[in-house]
Image (cartoon, rainbow, N blue to C red; front, side):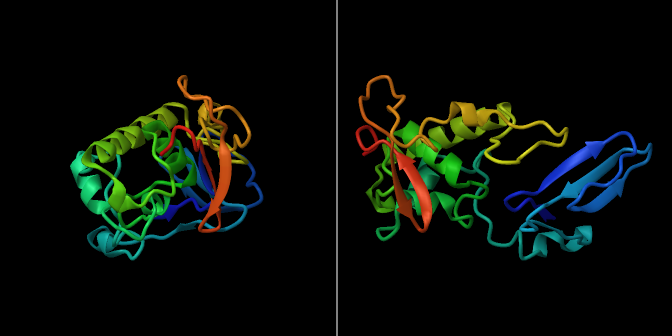
Length: 205
């Protein structure tokens, strides 16, 4: 069971190379191929469990729905997010509701769905919940197709950066024009739960 934290990465090497600084784990396969876990800031982890008990791991217990599975649809999201005291961004980042979403993809999905990050979850209509579910799936699939998002030092197992950051509609674009073709708004940044939130106040309501 592994989590990359903020700066962790796995790389695969087919030829023997000297270890790099901050390489913390190496697994050698038959044939000589090696998988190496690299984590400069040590926020990630890698733990080994017997197959029979892995699902009892505290790191897996309580995880919410996988957003790209068939278990998540508009009706399910509408029920999950029916909480009058919590805003949409915090609900999207709650790993106990929907697993695996981070700040960037939550904000991009909210923009695509036309929903303000500060909206209360209980204010969502069934149609809006369906739009948000579709937006989540669209954003995540586009990010996967682009190899992820490299803001600072993320690389994939081949050592290549991701390219989805070039498709960001709102994240990191404070002061820029909203890319929505029917909107003349400007991307704004606020702080929510101590983290930056980027959105368009004109088309996200």
